Every structure is written in C-alpha cells, then in structure tokens.
Length: 200
Image 1 (tube, helix red, strand yellow):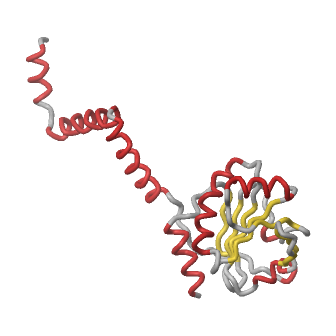
Image 2 (cartoon, one colour; image 1 turned 90 degrees about the horizontal axis):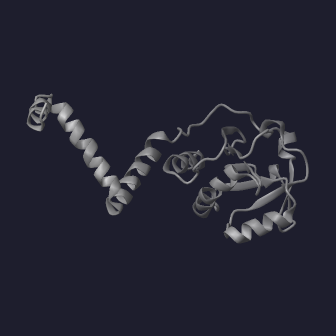
Image 3 (tube, rainbow, N blue to C red; image 1 turned 60 degrees about the vertical axis):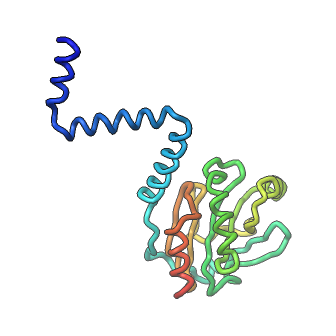
C-alpha cells in the first residue's frame, strides 16, 4: 500500500477519530516546546487541584471534655497553656515533626493559612521533639505559626499513630474534621470551612 492509499484510507475514518488524532499530536507538540509546556502544565495543575481536592465538611465528632481541656502544653518561648484556655475559639491542632517529610511538605500551606487566619483561628502545631531542632527549623524556613511541646498526654480524642494529623475544633469544642497525611491547607475549601465555623 503506497502513501496515497494510506492517506485515502485514513481520511475515510470518522471525523471524531481524526479530530482525536489531531488533538493528540498538538498536545505532543505543545509539550515539546518549553514556553507552551509551562503554560499547559500550569493549567493542568490548577484543574487537578480544583477537581481532586478532598471535600472539607463538618463531621460529627467528639466534644472535648474536661480531661481534654486540661491537656498541658508549652510554646517555644516557655509559655504554659492548657487546651481549655482556648475555649470558645475555632482551633486547628496539627501533630508534626521536623524529620517527617509529609509534615514538611504541608508546612508552607499551613503557614500561609496562618498568615490570614492566625488572628481568628487558634493554631496549635504540636511536636514531641526537643525545642532546639524545632527552633532551628522554624527560623530556617521563616515560618510564623506557633509551635507547642506536650507537657502531658494528648486527649484520647486526639491520639494518633501517624503524622501529620490535623484536627479542627469548632467553638463548641467539638472535633468537626480530622485529616491524616500531608494536605494543602491553603485552599478555598478550607478557608470557606473555617469561615463557616467562625460565623457560628
């Protein structure tokens, strides 16, 4: 079969199949050209983020009791607090460590969220490490969120075997959301969720 016969045979295919082939080859060409490749990958990233982000919605969780409210913490400046000091506030409690790659991956998004919500939501980032490596890590990365060390065992309702794990508590002291594993906390769904809790 010569080239002309092959072209004639190809052109007899359905318009949809021809259009699909054209689109495929245009896509390949776009990915080969650096300037168009960057723009294309940026669009794909935005679509992926919008479509595949988990839904953030309130769950029926445990209400923090008096024992939970007695959970004792100390910040990196030596200030002692208990969880009950934050009664009536929306809280974001995150368990993490400097040596944990998934924890480190979500830190930039938590810091950006803290920059906008730190005055409205109580951020409690908790680590069991010694303070020196934590301070070094925070200073190196220029993070502004507050970090706490545990002085007593975390509440049973917040015990976790994996990090990072994050709990969101509403003004009524109910755990309404929890997430294990790295997550992009600086997104519209999280912000809308926090706004809803703040308005309650």
